[in-house]
Length: 443
Image (tube, rainbow, N blue to C red; front, side, top):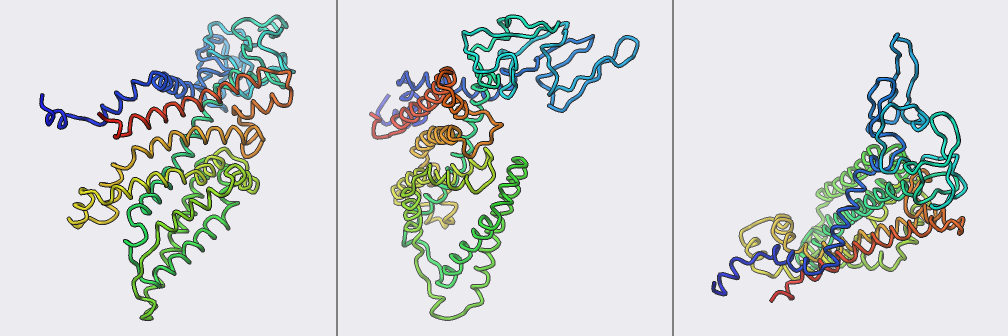
């Protein structure tokens, strides 16, 4: 096969994957990441104080798959009501179940075992109340294999459910950061300071509209947004959509008003320094300690895990924007971009359909590093007791419990290992991806 045929059959995706597979440590980390994702997805069925399957007085029940407020009435053979089971408060271990299949960890993260309180160690003596009401040594199935905290919550269950919180924080926050960073970086790199023209009056009114839009959309509605997220993610997203809609409406109104101002000096066209605006915004955010900025914002809003994700995302887009801007500065002079412009395609189509797909390879590496950073920030906030509500179990909050009692070493070692491994997994995958996606390494 000739060199020309080899070049024609070359697939950069296959090449990058083959390069990635050569890094055995990164490949193992990728499999471990898939394992963490599976654990996060099935956490309610891996660690739950309710059985997966149970037979009770002739009734077949699936408590772990039921909603919290579900209630079942148990009737005897004569039709008389014998028992009422409310799923979220029933002590399933005290019931005389005919058949039962328990989860791998038969405890919920918020469930309190009053017989194993006061920091019971993994190897310590643990007690159990059986169906007859007798206090005995705990059976192996119901043992707290990683110990408990001061109020009897199972550490293993907290770690498993904390996996879901940590991965969700990383993905959601960096999803927000990616949208902001890619959009602003693409505009800054494609247009620069001397490619986008606008009349002076429209430019000035657009800036004024953006200022007032953010002032009314977020400044005046911060409590409404905070209250919405405290009521649930759906209410919070509705409030966010209202705020963004308000911003667009205000900007549109100011731009519409600018059409009626016909002063000749204000209707001259000028270049819009988009690159300068984005670059100065990146420098401004980078000059402020990120953790301090997040702590300041969380101090004035309602405590919510979703608020924490949004704040981390809004403050974490600078690295992604810089990578995207650098790639667009390189790509905008290439032949396929110039061909798209010469064919009369709009700037938005040229940016997002033609240029952006060819600029995302290094951005994905930055996103992978950003996910690890977001998980670390959330763990730090939880450790400090800031931002995350007390009823949500995270790896950082478990570490905080260990700080309160240094003799409970299991509350320090196991959450610390979980955080360390997760951060290391993302960093190793990001480094291997950076090497695999670098075309300069292609031979």
